[in-house]
Length: 101
Image (cartoon, rainbow, N blue to C red; front, side):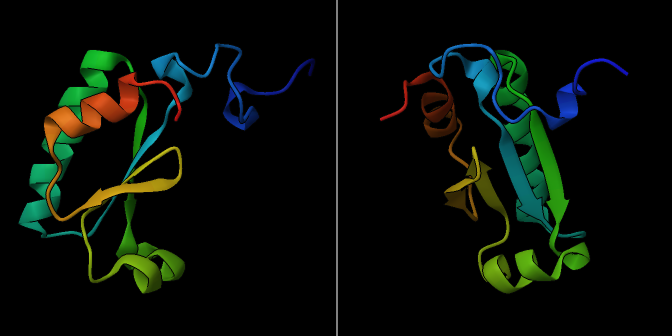
């Protein structure tokens, strides 16, 4: 097959200031009401900005569990920790729309 699957391309063709170059990761666990609240904010902001997001379950990933179990839910932007416990909608929006610092 010609070309590489888009799933395996790490850097999109757009400039870094475009929101499409971001990825939001929500690290959560089942039965966590703060995680449910955080997911609502992440879904809303990402949908508005056209930014992809993914969810990861700490009960299925030992490394994530060991790193974040006291902070769940944790939100990462481009692999770097953005916040934990409570997600501020405006702060997340700002992180996704501002140019890299």
